[in-house]
Length: 366
Image (cartoon, rainbow, N blue to C red; front, side, top):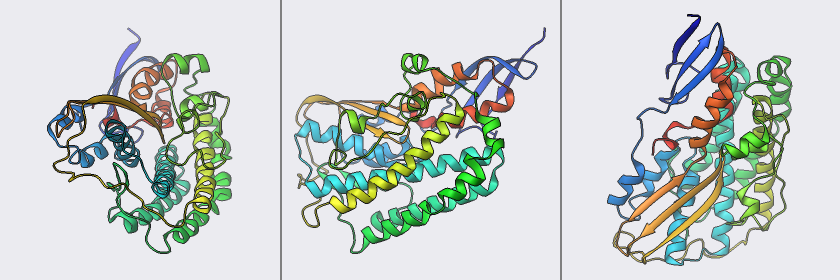
């Protein structure tokens, strides 16, 4: 009689998109949690079977609204593997720089959501402002701020405009110069530590068993990153490190995100310095609207800002994919891991744990 079923719905500041959770609670402690990813932005994989290879690019972007760029990349990588297409060297570097900018923008968005949910409005406003600076770069490069559709099979849609590398460096220096303020205001704030430390904790063994990837598994001390394990684009052309933490809690996950964002900025500088100054940025392909990909199947994966992103794709030799299936980080983070991490925690920490796992609802109900 002391147990209560509580519906923690999408209207709460700590939820993402249309996500909701049914909680069984005793007092303010959670006994059991059942995640419901909702029905927004769904059915992508089946819809892709009815669209041509190139028409699917605007569709895959919607699977992760916050960071559509790695969805473009993984789909292009799948098509390239099926069609045996090579990407020019300069195109590989541009892809890496572009994806790391997307990672920085995505992490800033996550920092905004998390700090705003805990009431750290100053840090939240800084993060959203700095994300807008990254979106300004994307707008100049692609003509769009959210869905860029810049990566394509064979490379990228166009080369960097003149002086664009200098603008990237200037923007990242502006963001990097604010890191001490972020630390003083948020990351080293005792209130953040009290709210996040030992909250939503999972061990390394649990993380591995439940399919954790990205910052969620690196926060348990495991150096697991597809950019290191199976290098793609130009990630094997420069030296960089995989930041880890040991706690496995919300505190460690947020610090892992901060460390990874700083590492991405340093990586972009190195990529710009080492990138060929001239050369093609894409390999010419047949008319994209009449393109027929050779029959076969392929599996490719990359490291999105949320972790390992995989794609299984099948072609029957036609002008459309025969079958498509994505392996998205939010599927395991938002269902299996979230439900486990919520057990025994306070109702006040539901949003805290949810956002620390970086869940994007459309990645689940594909």
